[in-house]
View 1 (spheres, rainbow, N blue to C red):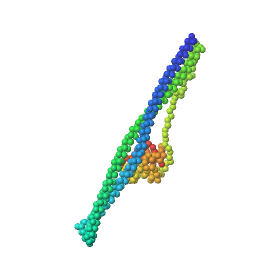
View 2: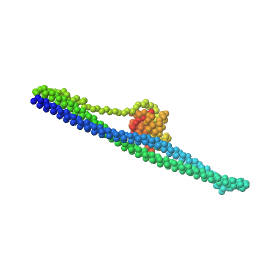
View 3: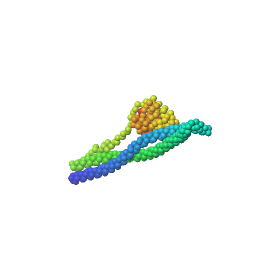
View 4: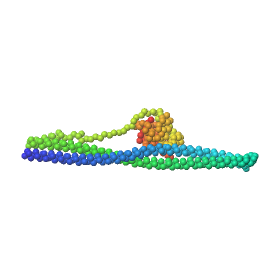
Length: 376
């Protein structure tokens, strides 16, 4: 009789062990599948991030090209104005000579030729008068060609600028799409992380439960082997209670990290000069690529560089260089630079900034758009 009870108890314990083991293997399979999904999603996110990094490098190069092309256009406009002015002066000089020589019936010219004396001198002076006319005509034609060449160059530069601006728009659209996809993939990875942690927690709980059941079964078998009385039941209940798993046995915690910017000393006096300089251009200066002409025109990084120069602070020319050379801070103060990819502005406090925003607009006050705040 005792042997039969012992055999029954052992069989029950073995069944419990196999059943629990089956559940663990199933949980491990689920976790492995989730880990695989996470790895695939992370690989996609990494690939998208690599594409975005390459695009951001191109956008930095494009910003430099836009500034250079803007400066070329402005120089061409200056050359065109100078050539036009020179042509106009040549034209006025020619009119004076024509008036002097021909306005009174060519008398002055005829007298000058006849007074020459011999025939050789007459021919020489007549040829001189003709050369004067040819010189005027040649000079006018030369300057006309110069003006046309500069005008053609300006048109070509402006076409180049249009192409660059279209490329910039395309890059911005690609950046937006890639950023959205990266955010979606990052969210997917985070969600899979949560599922993996939950699966690990459940597996740990089941493992603890399995161990408790196995221990209880083992004690029950041992009790049946040594005694046939009813005390084995209460012993089983007592041992089961004593070996219940604690609440911490299956918990898995996940750490979180956050990045914070550095700190830099704040010069309120210099900041006041920077902000006042920015205010002086609001509604006055137009956005023109490659320009840094107070009261007339700026591009975004030209404005920030000029404002800092008014406070005696020298900073680089382009937005990417200004980010690299400054200190990223998390406590923005008036005078700091608001930086986003390809764009910079002057922070003036209360969530506002002054910026040279885009072609065709004047320097203005806007709500802050900033990935980083930069201090010098």
